[in-house]
Length: 263
Image 1: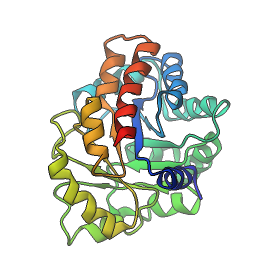
Image 2: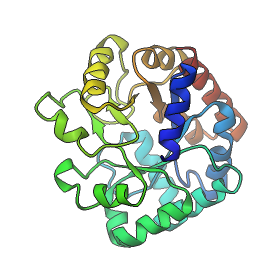
Image 3: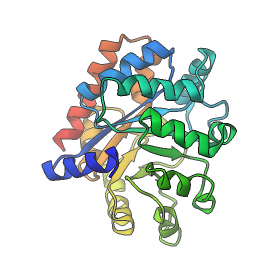
Image 4: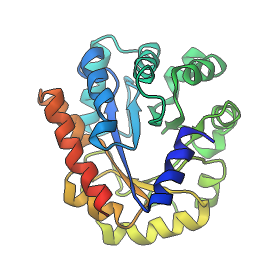
């Protein structure tokens, strides 16, 4: 059982929904990013999605793209991202960390070397947005064999014919992308999301966490109310981009997590 599996089992036992937060590793720099990361659990975050900066982030909207650029300009790499996780683990051995990004940096390092390094750094799961199920032998299956969850995205265009293939080798949870398009582009609506969550839960037998288009405490509560949890990324990254202090960023995160936990 991974930390992700343990966290969702604990939340289910308590009748609570999950709040997942996304930050870009190294944005605006290593130390500031690590300070935010270290404060997330106390701000009510159940699972941390740690973005891996990449030069061509095709699924990300402007907010996340710019965060990745800032991180790359500050010298962030895959190795430094894993170092950040390692530093976080010195004080926190329970909060799950999901590394989210693209395959190219992992491929460049080498899958076997990456999985050893990721496991040693305390990474619990992977979301690699540009590896479809047809490529499961590339990373998904080796990752699961190494004890890491491989979390797949489902979208409004994932129909009943495609869904079984998408969830076949998924573990940990399914990330439901509530809107079509890029991150930060529109708002999620609970009424649209609810039937899709039910459909994916039945197909996967896994928790379904909803992301994209969640940017306020009220929206966090509404979406968590029809899912197993909610993830917020762009709204948090926007506060970091605006130069908010670590304390102010974490205070904002707390309002979002409180919303999800009220659901």
